[in-house]
Image (cartoon, rainbow, N blue to C red; front, side, top):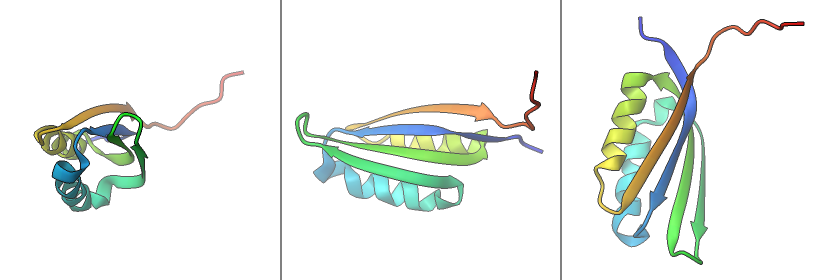
Length: 90
């Protein structure tokens, strides 16, 4: 059994006209691991920023980031943590 992870994926799209449709198609394919999404155009730098909150296995999330990272003009970074039952320490 694979361990589920929760995390954030940051996506920077340098050329929205060329890459945004492909990014959206990939994100839609992985909708089952996406908890939330925020997209913001940053006009000053002529880029588009997307943040995803994800919950899935490392294989699922790695496949998502790998496919996004192979697109031209797209940069991807992720930060994942293993979620376990928390114990309060006093």
